[in-house]
Length: 177
Image (cartoon, rainbow, N blue to C red; front, side, top):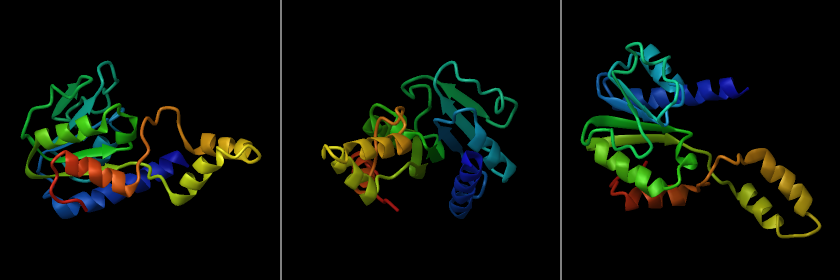
């Protein structure tokens, strides 16, 4: 089921990126994991690809010419400034300690009028209700089990649409779609 959902997410991203790029623009995928999205981008005709991941990550799948450049560090300092037309962040922003620093980095590495495309779980009204129910002693146990089922311990941040807009505006992005 996870693979199927990832494929849908990847294809939604690719369909959108095809409307914004001629497939030759420089794209970097930050938080690339093992490079699954880079592989799918490549399979769909995008060729000028780079990836970023923490030091020690296994990027052998994309280190065979799929990714033109691979950057590995913890603070994005190895990524050159004003280099990319598009930055992708798929299911990554919720894992970082400072989303503001991440978005400022995206602003730094993008060329003028560049694009950040990202996907992250969004906090829904139902999740806010269950979060409130955590404070109600009689219902708390149900709310705890529900919360455990949807929240990974590795998610450091949860976002609403408004919080995402605030982070992007504070990082200097002019247009948010």
